[in-house]
Length: 258
Length: 258
DNA sequence: ACGCCTTTGTGAAGGCATTCACAAAATCGC
DNA sequence: GCGATTTTGTGAATGCCTTCACAAAGGCGT
Ligand SMILES: NC(=O)c1ccc[n+]([C@@H]2O[C@H](COP(=O)([O-])OP(=O)(O)OC[C@H]3O[C@@H](n4cnc5c(N)ncnc54)[C@H](O)[C@@H]3O)[C@@H](O)[C@H]2O)c1
Ligand SMILES: NC(=O)c1ccc[n+]([C@@H]2O[C@H](COP(=O)([O-])OP(=O)(O)OC[C@H]3O[C@@H](n4cnc5c(N)ncnc54)[C@H](O)[C@@H]3O)[C@@H](O)[C@H]2O)c1
Image (cartoon, rainbow over all chains, first blue to last red; front, side):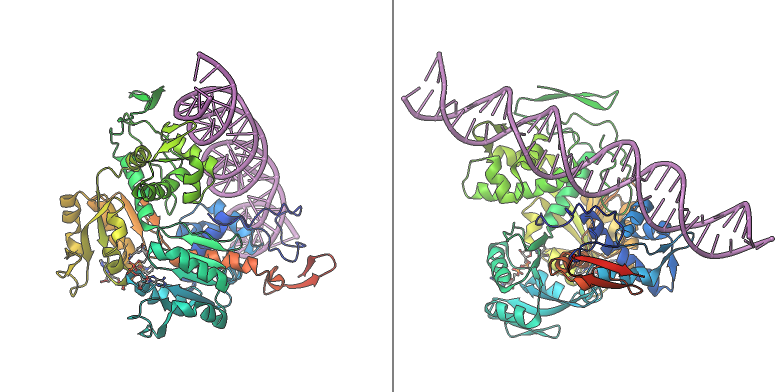
């Protein structure tokens, strides 16, 4: 979970932009932030196809959400639509870019250049969406010094220097789980404030640092859960505990006897 | 009812719930399911360290959540703790495994063996957490027929056969965005009901199919948003091209002039 | 047997998030 | 001009999730 930042400002002023504390951008709910990235992708796609204006209805369809939700999400950024017409694609693209802090290309460090790390190092989707991989870092002697996608792999001991030199605030961690906390600690003390973690482990960080994790096995497990449900497996009755359950087929409900 | 919580992503899903069989744990909230995977990982780690019993407090710490939340989550599976003592690690591990449908090793197909796909194909974290990669599929002539991590890459045209033969319900899509919807359609018509999508595109699927997406650039953009926030950039607060904003230091407010 | 101490399981409360539904705003055709 | 038409922006309602806080349950020592 992410640190306890965010929202909490019970700003008296309604969600409208005007007169908010200088340090604050109108509080954008966390769930909205996560979707802005999707809207942005859809908008860029539309822009490339020469579309100049889009309604909340069709943008919502393109992004796979409900249109009321989309409008509410966008309303947190301000009022950039035109009633009866829709949203100007380029204006809205720009607004979301600003909100997400992508106006400047952000420098990112990638730590761990094994199988996953090498795939990530060459991933064009980072550059095209606002991020520049500014440093490749590993600990393995065979890797340090080699060139990869235009960058020289550097040793993890130089991490602090690199972070400072390149003004890196965001790091991607793709080292084995056993090394992840150590790498994380080094990153934090070097001044990195945002970490995307691929290692299947919980990282401990001070509260001013954000961690997001990508856990592929967990994703599959969630799918597995739903799949299990869909194909209804009678199993699980094992329940060595103090429970028995009785199905009541006619209603589809379950009575639990304890 | 089980319905409407499968959506998560692209499609509003009205999951068809047929008469639910005699399993206990009926409605497990979606948020809980997502955390069960984390608890499971922590429990397996504890088990390997020889820990036999764990309290909600320490398991919660290991999983990075609040202990009340953990207890409530576990309570949806049934009552497997002992007051004053805690949870038996192996019993709880088993219960979560069952809930997630991991008792049988699930067969997974991986489509797209480019940079990312090859990294995924060799990822040990799938096998160790309940999944068996049962098929590698690509469309490129140079790849089809080659062996990779003990499997022969097969052509995407054979997809339907493979899915049937191996009883595959879950597929991982790692093809370029432009090919993703097509691959997805083939998967769905072959009978796959769960898809993990790495391509940065919204997949359209019928309501009985679950899609989860992994969008790395979006993850970075979310981090970027918070980072932007943290490093408080007052001049970006109002932030629109057609507006000017004036900081008013004495009050800490911003007046927006349009 | 009996209290003591620890820890679970869960009502209740409060926050967020989603969705509905509609008035207000803007354009367009006439 | 003006009414018809479209589509935004948003109160209000609803539901989901998190957190609090505590009674009940179980083990343990004496
Ligand atoms: N391979 C995948 O598809 C995949 C998928 C999901 C998650 N992951 C996770 O991502 C991480 C990396 O996976 P991988 O398959 O690339 O592993 P890998 O073993 O191929 O690569 C790990 C790399 O990290 C480097 N490394 C080790 N310790 C280091 C340290 N202290 N500092 C800097 N670099 C260090 C190693 O030299 C190696 O190059 C693992 O935690 C894995 O669980 C991998
Ligand atoms: N490389 C990364 O680190 C990374 C990270 C996140 C997301 N992604 C996404 O994952 C996907 C794959 O990325 P990549 O870097 O591995 O790309 P890639 O170009 O290296 O590999 C794509 C593979 O898909 C195969 N393919 C193309 N069309 C196909 C079809 N119709 N059926 C079956 N196979 C087909 C190609 O032959 C190729 O082997 C892309 O959508 C990319 O945006 C990649």
